[in-house]
Image (cartoon, rainbow, N blue to C red; front, side, top):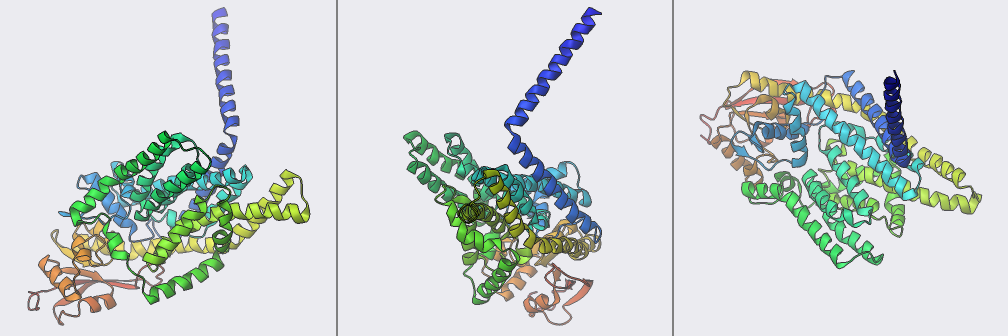
Length: 533
């Protein structure tokens, strides 16, 4: 009996000791836990809102056809033929090889299409929660108050396109997460983070090519630290080594690109990047006028965010400004399409700069004008004002985007996915088809595909072919089907005489919100008797 009581007392002591240890841990990391809970709850609630809206409109799906390109590359990785978009045709068309690599893990659990879609959602939500947490943490650190982190995290999920694009199946949640984590590390002064920054810079490049911008932030961080007298010869060596590490992380993909095309960057870069035309610049200017009205914090961040530089925190302002300039100079139109998906990281980073800069300015104004001296009251007042000024204007667009999300998923399911399934059921296994929409058509048809835009077909993007030569190329490759919008088919295939093709399948969308046209057709090509045969 005594032994039993002693054992019980011993067990209780262990439980109490573990509980005390847990309480000390929670107390020591109180702010991080609060921000983590806020990020988890706010992000998951937003995702539930969008997914529930989608399920009330359509079946589970991805909101952009390009999302299926990443899933297709993920499947090739799982199947042991990585980066062969079509069998026997290696490609460098993955804009985000790291994202495809991560998505390949889904196929270890399921290959059923709806299961794959839900797997994409799950992985996306994990990175989305991480991004929301990092956004709050950055601002909480800048302003030395967890309250500011909370309001930033909540504002982050209300950025109108955030949940839409985070759940689209694109690489957006990964890229935003890596950018935000890079800002956290760039702001650190400890030597132990130097090499970690090199790894992050390499991962940023593998997340999106423009992620290479992180590499150029490393010298600026070195300059900031040198002004503080924290750079030694050993540390200078570590900075140089971090650059080598960044190159080492990125080099497998660079070498793959070089081996396939002779160029170091993915073909999506060469297909989209060019000197802007006058019409593209005009479209950029028009859209940004709308963005400023929809997201009033953008001009605030762009101009007031410079306050962060003398504070020694330049990266939350410098990165979105640099990315904006890059997109304006290289891809002004491509950055606008697909619900402005290239620009979302810019909006997210500008949100952080806006909250931090406005908070600093408000504190100065309230102290000078209202003569508020109580720190707690001042902080609460500033948080309330910023929440009203930044979050409230975004709510209408946020709600609109939820409905837009459901309709977009339905459009892709009803057009590209439906045609891909039709090709799988109604064409021979060795059929070859050409298209502009390279995602779901290839994934669901399991047929060899030629991308007429060249995103995943190296010969097209690097061949400098005329339209006539492209048609000849399709003939030479045995392409006997074309999946196109009618007006694009007429433009590219105007060299084919009447009778050399026929329409075999048609999809028409009654309410189209995301596809390039309302109607897409499957054409069967008969080369006999044409000048190409």
